Length: 373
Ligand code: CO8
Image (tube, rainbow, N blue to C red; front, side, top):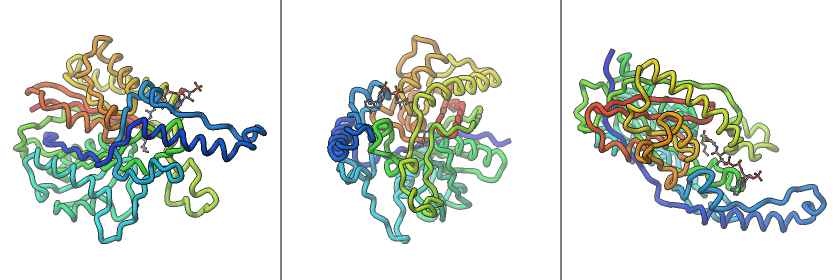
């Protein structure tokens, strides 16, 4: 079987940042507006008054301080509360292709490769902005990569599952060098009028090059030692957005067509799954958790990450062992663990071990053990 390495990574950070205070000010103005407009119904007990959001709650409950967005116009306008993203003509590059190419070029540069060296592109993210033609094929055309390309969606585990697909394609001989790209354009799916979730997500794009070890000339390559994926159906993180929505016009834009979740339940149900999943993988691979120099974990909630890390490594964990990026980027769906990997791997020496791990909707968990070459 071909040995496989991750030989480069890239990160595209969108141009606009939105702070918790900006978001909360807008949300609270909307609450005042709603409660005023519905005063009679609220008084009569037919409608619940909306409660204020707060930056203190957001930071304490999630660890998020700000997020990036591709388009800020509209998000902070109480009458709009969504990014105003204009339709582009079919001949123009799509927004997700544009974001993905920026990250992909960085990953190629780090891997010491050019686009023609790539024979498979996988675009993996929580949403693609259209069903077809695949964003990956659009990127293939725009960058000039060879071979074939496809899109895949597994919510927050899209990036790790796609890396596993890339590894298997190389091991099986259907590709030699794969670009895995995660253009996470989440802001159009955020319900900015929902207090429970208006603060959670941000936009970003990440990319990694996965290639046959013997072909790699990268000076910063990581050998893939072990991969593992698991899924278990749950509706606790859900969006009912889809191509059938228009067939029921009355319900086509109801709030269930945007991201929504039972955050507490997710917390309680997913954490034991993550721990059991990793424990089984480490046992099978005969690796002790303390042998990892770093855990590049999914970035949904700081308290969730602290729980996983403490369970694996004990109470005396240094912040550098499991870096947090969600304070600046918020939850970027599947890109979070790849951002952490990209930003925090330069101090690795030959033989150092790291774990890339995602967890989220589905439920889904993907984990990859990496060793610095
Ligand atoms: N401001 C002030 N108070 C608030 C707010 C707010 N914004 N929101 C809730 N509260 C209140 C609640 O009403 C509640 O009040 P009370 O006790 O009176 O009922 C109190 O604060 C506590 O509420 P919670 O119990 O809900 O608060 P938590 O401590 O559980 O924190 C979190 C909420 C942050 C949502 C937390 O539960 C969490 O992060 N859970 C993990 C969820 C998770 O990991 N989800 C993964 C989702 S991402 C994913 O899988 C990818 C999907 C695809 C991408 C989608 C792109 C859009």
